[in-house]
Image 1: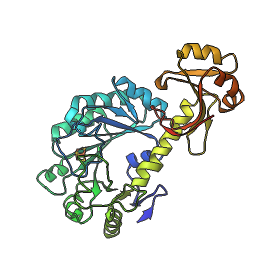
Image 2: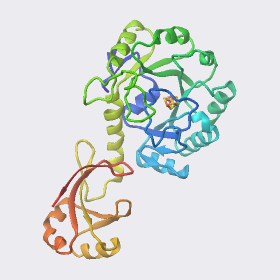
Image 3: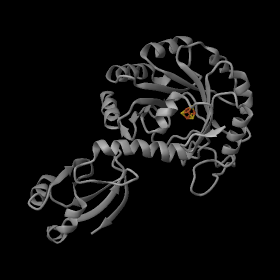
Image 4: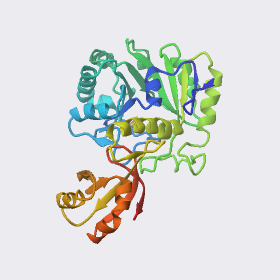
Length: 342
Ligand code: SF4
């Protein structure tokens, strides 16, 4: 077992899908929240759980072509298709895989699915559409579909499960070790949503700063030590929530930054913002007398260089404008981390 350098541990090389993901090169494609299952540990938010919505990274998608835009703007070299169960909306999933494969060269796509809807025919369809890697999520409490892990496919085939303390994960590994190429064990994660029953069942987070559940990491590392010859990757909540996400957002920042934005070492953007009661066009005209600025309709404001905002603050305040220096993520929703009124 060795550390991967990305806040995770592995036996052997990590799967191709993970190699791109840890570097922020995978588009996170949530193809639907619809799922046949209602797992007590489901990490989805209320806005996504069992809802037929699509997100590419943080961007809600209304037309599949917008997925291509988001992949380009994020400098993605692949996509991880997740849900819900992507097989619950099979036609959409197949169409999206084909669309991405047609648009981009050497674009690696992996997909996560529970076993319930898997058939040999569906695997063939996914293979024909161009899917590179499939990750099955078997039910640890019910082995009735485990035989599907034996289905043959040319795609790279693995198992990905949350590492639930006290569960008999070894039983699944022994069952499937000759049928799959790799095992991904995820740190079990708490989610603040009504359908997530972990707290009710007595699971607690390992500390107040983490969503990782106490005991999950110990079990994962124990299993990695037990099976040194099997290809295994233990993925922490820190890898998912900080390393992967921040690497991905840094790449997006490079493509979306305006000439006046400052990019921090963490990949966040620092800029000035101006809000007022007039129309954005009217404000833009007035402020342009002093310095360059842009209309940002999404957040109903003007954006500009921090220095200019400071330099001309008294003139702008005389116009009754609200001035702020903000630090934001370069996500589609320009998530605000900090703001300071001047
Ligand atoms: S299979 Fe996945 S998406 Fe579906 S309920 Fe379980 S954890 Fe949630």
